[in-house]
Image (cartoon, rainbow, N blue to C red; front, side, top):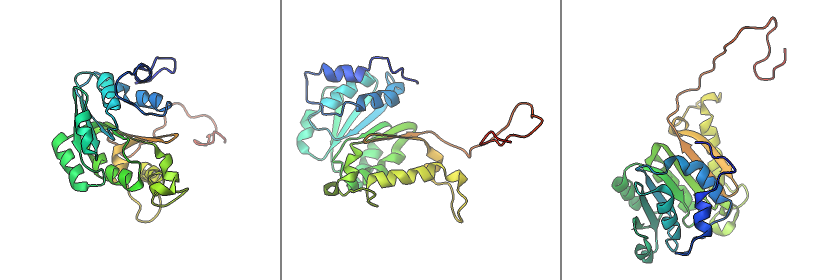
Length: 235
């Protein structure tokens, strides 16, 4: 689904009119959300948000995705269990606890939309992606936000720090293009076969899934009297 830039954003409208539990978001996130999530609205989807805070964003997702959606929040703070708005659920556990994340996967099954708005520490983002990305449905979306912490040492990051989530995300570009690698031993990975697109924004990465086969190139039309270079358009 293509979102017209002039279209009103129902998430931003909800946020601006919010008189319920607190929602804390960077304003440019709302257009990113709507651009990538609109196709899931009013469908029987499972939406998971890591990081409950005060429960306000769970209520926003409930309103946005509609009554058929299952909305589940994850947080390490036991007090968040009582903050689940009507029609939502909360699971308590750490996003670095692989056993907990695996239990969530077994319980929920396929996840259509996953939003990582948790602790923003490198280990949290990396472990969550490693465990939960495979649980995202074949044409689902995995969104990680507040990636500016990848540049902050107190969160385990730093500019070009090899252990940051941003540096890991850069490596996904190579997996996306792995069909074209010529280095010895290079081969497509499960990520190559499942990631359809990587969308980088200020502090946000959106990974869109879709089953992929090896790209095919074709040529149609009538040949000119002289052959043009297919890449540069020059003779």
